[in-house]
Each structure stands twice: as C-alpha cells, then as structure tokens.
Length: 176
Image (cartoon, rainbow, N blue to C red; front, top):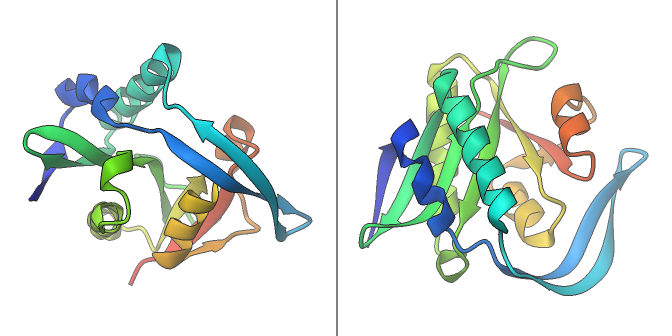
C-alpha cells in the first residue's frame, strides 16, 4: 500500500531512499524542434553522493521559496516524490514547473508517478498555473511517462532551465 504525503523541508534527508537506478535503452534529443531518438544500452547505477547533495539542495531551495513536494511512502520508506517549483514562468507567467520527480526502480510502472504528477497538477492549478512546465531527462522512460500523462514538447523553452539542463526534453502539460 502506498501513502501520499505532503513533504517538508526537514524530510530532505529522505530523498536518498529513492533507487534511481535504471537500464537505459533509448535517449531522446530535440533537434530543430523535432524529437529524435538514439539507441543506448547501459545501466545507470543511481545517484552518487554529490548528486544526492544537489537534489537535496534543490529540494530545500524550492520548498524554502514556496514550492511544495509530495512523497509516496511504502512501509515508511520513501519510494517516490515530486516537487512543484515556486516560480511562475512562461510568457504569460502561467506555468509552474515540475522541479524534481523520481520513483524508485522497484515501484515504477505502478501508477505512483502519475498520482504524484496529478497531485502536483492540482496544486499548480490552485496557484494560478494553466500549464506545468517539465524539463524531463532525455531517457525513454521519463519522456514516455510525461507524454502518457499529457506532456507535449514545447518550443518556448525556459531559458533558466534550458541553461541548467540543455540535454533535457522540455515539455508543457495543460492543466484542466
């Protein structure tokens, strides 16, 4: 059974409970507004210490500045989480971004990410957003997840997020 809870800044030390490992078979890139895929064949072993520290830093930054986080827990273990960014963005300032979103390897494809994304979407709408902005890792699993959940490639990329992660696939999701 999965329990979904609003997470606090004090829970940042729990983020390392996520098993971010994954076997990657396909990568995507956007080239002249067209999505192209390339074959890949490697195991990503998960976060190293500096990556965990960076994720914790980003999590704390967003929550300190008004963002929010939802966690999915199985028997008191964090198995998934998503963070809604604090900054309104886009030409009309009608977008909030999915800042962080991860589900542990053994819990993927069970609907946990979709529930977290829906909870984040509801909060974004309450905060006045019309769209979620998604800066997705370029893996097939991440891009397919966001597409399945209503994400579409955007040509109007956020400069700050693009400069931070230029390899990411930038998408938006209309909030209904």
